Length: 118
Image (cartoon, rainbow, N blue to C red):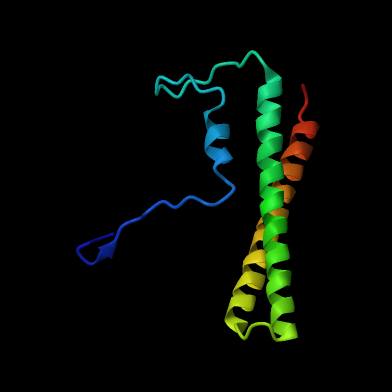
């Protein structure tokens, strides 16, 4: 959407990351005050987080498999869409790089927590 000559920001949702919105709402008071409240069951939070991570890794794996399939089709001559194979390959590469960086940040956060004195 454009207003005048300046483009306006349009938020986009990413496939497989819908759970991130649910994760951000865990523990919220729900009244818009932004005050976090304790949840009685920690198992719900763990399962939501683990499901989110499993979906994210599964999506990256699916993109890697799709890129491999496109490359195989190109190499065997089933299709002549070089651009489609390259797009799928780059998309898989970027997804994998993002996953590795998120993992690195999670490990770094865990290590920082372990260094904290109680």
